[in-house]
Image (cartoon, rainbow, N blue to C red):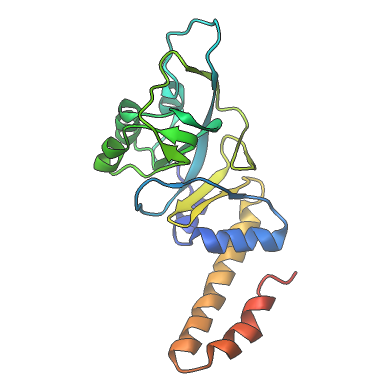
Length: 218
């Protein structure tokens, strides 16, 4: 899924503005409990998904996450549904190297990752619930690739838009992006005007009282 103009416009925003816009539009998209594992740049892109499950008796030669990497175009964001597990890694260093080589914008794991220092050294933005050294080998297998998933209480389909920064993660449904982005841009413009008023000496009590509480009124 190639980078498009909506991705470029999302990159100029931040998660807070996009979250506010979706609040106003009645869209649930703010992911809870998943944060960057180190300070990172803002990323925005289209989602490539995969889902993990506990290994049973099945035999597989396909390493988890590799299909998602191969399915990614430059600028995409790989998103893993590991059901919030933090007792075993759902992502690791060789996958990070492959993703970075592929041009992936970042990786989001609803669960834990290992080899965090490797990902940081590569300059790959990595978001997860935790870091853990314990390998997925013999414990976890891939259930599906590029199918609908859920992360942090938010449903996400392949091709949905994702923005992530040091405040968190927001999923923008692809069929609502044309509403969300302009609304978020409008919110940013109004907040910038409020900040200018404060810097020019206007009381923050006055500025916030007049503008902030009404900003998301429908």
